[in-house]
Length: 184
Image (cartoon, rainbow, N blue to C red):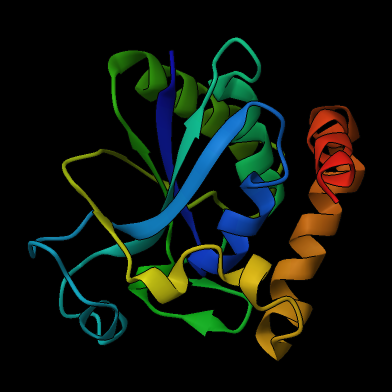
């Protein structure tokens, strides 16, 4: 049975690319959540008119990878102490946010954030909010890194996150990378 988890930590292209590396992740969809407008456009989100964050919705097999492991990867690939920004991307749409879908996710994320706060000199500013609605981003945003690996932004920002996941979470990507090699 597939479960879903929703995270925002900067540009969704980067976060999507990182999660796509993991065994047990069945799909990653870029989108918008945490705002006050139905079915927002990328342009409106970028103008900060909707209150939404750029997020990814991760569909995963909980028998292969746990929500706790997804949290670990999420917090490893972005800086949860940066308020309304990640790297060169500035604005509320780039905020660090975990959108929980049930009480178990809420409890796990809250405990993780609390423990993480002790590891940083600066405060962890990650928001924890119930997922009200998820709006899928426009098609050209989906699998952006995979489709545009030589894009300058991707080379500078997404590629290092992917490499970090491959190195730090090697045991969680081995099967996926082996399957890709056999597909060639």
